[in-house]
Amino acid sequence: MKRTLSVVIFLFSLININAQSRIDLFPDDINIKPFAANTLEPKLGSIFQLSKNELELNIGNSMDIARLTNGHGDTYSLGADLFTFTLLRGEQNFHFPVDAVDYLFGVNFSYKKVVSDYSFGFRGRISHISAHFVDGHYDGVAQTWRDGLNPRVYSREFFELLGFYEFQCLRVYAGGAYLFHVDPATIKKDNFQIGFDYYAKDLLGDHLTPFIGYDLKLIHLDKYTACNSISAGIKFGNADSKGISLLLNYYSGKSIHGEYFDKNKEYTALGINLDL
Image 1 (tube, one colour):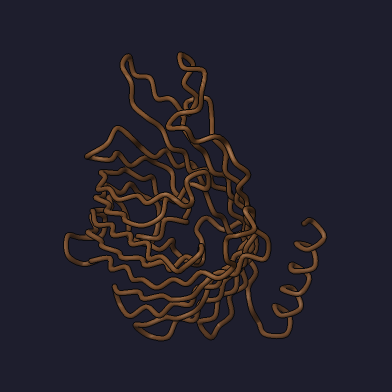
Image 2: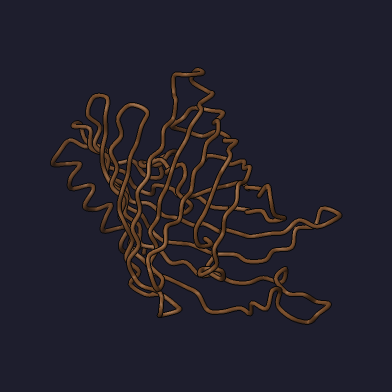
């Protein structure tokens, strides 16, 4: 990884000399803002299901390591991702047993072109995800795993590419992922994705921004299955920088957790997220 980063920085330096560009190392923001309704984005917060005693605790971040910007509106970046997605239950005395947890880590690269009042570009990711049941999934009294579901091996390594077009406050995107290694091996290797998000930046001022987003994934198990995610809420803080978001989320489709990858989920949830 260090060698790869050194090579990339060296190449960026050559472009900088030849094209009068600028290189930033470890900038404060990221080149491509997370897609609002996409379930596989860096999150730091929780969502609380309204109809079931389950909640998600998400701890994750993405950062740009090196970024090159030229004088023609082009920005290139290389970054890293590290997420956890955790499924918990609520119990008395402020106890939250952890049922399942998924870990993601990888690298990302992106390109964005800004032209007047619109922009376009893409984000690519090469990532690993592994999933695990935790002690909260074990029934100590019955001495068995909850719901008769024993731990199973689940992991995937994948390449994902999403292209986007943004005009003023509306951004649309589409792309897909190829799983070049996956367990269980019966899972197919192609997934597809499309969606949009809209941030009403001028509606309530610079630091109070309503937003809405929709994401559709077609995941391929034994057949293609649609997974729908809709998020709407309000962000306290600038729409394109750090802040806190309060949101309402609706999800239907296969579970986002690997240990439940073939189980259907449908819920509405309230959430809070720290946008880094």
